[in-house]
Length: 458
Image (tube, rainbow, N blue to C red; front, side, top):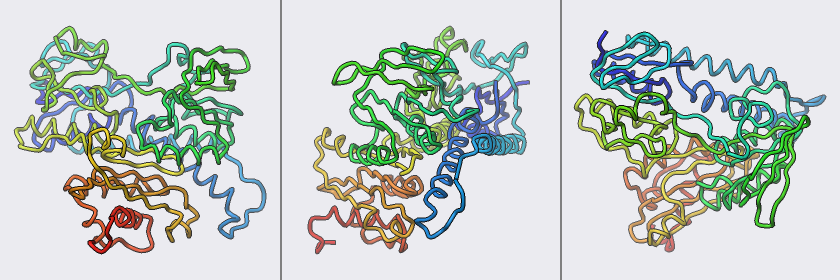
């Protein structure tokens, strides 16, 4: 059978592309070697949030007395039930994707796809023909040379999400979203955590003020934080693992029952026939033009296989842009300067746009508005006073350049600021917007007001 579009991979890039393709009238096929929904729905975004919700419930129960609630007896995690709930949530979402693909009459082919030639994709013994091919195969965990993942003593995020028991101690290498979220999860279960980061701050892509606040919260929760620390090697034994870590003070040793390697991801692009066909890549990532076409006409790529941030929502945005331009629609380019990022620890982190130091490096004079949640009535009532809203404005135009939130519900607030930044909103616009009271989101208006030098000019 011949198709208008053949998609390899069914994650947030692949299934979004497939649905939009079918809506636009394309005969569409999607190829998936594992479960529909890809890593995000099955081993990433969704099941991790289920695990973190269990951790949140556990922590709330442990501190119930501070809310005037008395719990008789101890509060303990049931790791089997926690993992089972997480897997059920993932399975439910996968069924939802299956429903969507069936609804839009998209052919689903199970197996590993490889590109034989422009317009031809092999899946086992079957060869599919299509006018266009879209590579949306996503990414897989990276591994340090001296501490490679073996699935036993040194694990990746997949093994970390389905533990059979709770380790007493764990060293987490890497403090990005995956490392920080799983460090928080295991710490909540009672595991003693050492979080090791090569850069000079944890969550290195975030504003330095945000990193300082998270570090303070993590240390308060009992974690050990090591920054400017590079893992040189790992020595395994029957009892666990001993990491050799280079720090500013010299060599230090970290011992743990389990080591979680969370040092980022690498694209899944090898052994697909792409390089043989002349598809240009840079360090395993596919090069594309603004329409997401590769150097071979008719072959496109979106998502984690590109040299763009590995974010599910960005992959979906790229997929929509790619397919709509295939259909000849005149739509704007993906705005890579306005992509929100979220980390679902407690407190949560959400950000979009320029960090303060980024603006300074660009020579932009800025005004900063920073509102602490310690001053928020809603935060006080909820017992969630850690964190702040920090807004970065252009000092001359008052335009919002960046937004950085750490605190409860931060990831729910960032969407509005992303949209606001997209329409070049100013501090005065935010000040004169009416925010509901009492809410955490009032901190946005307050931060904007605090950025103004002359309140009389508001």
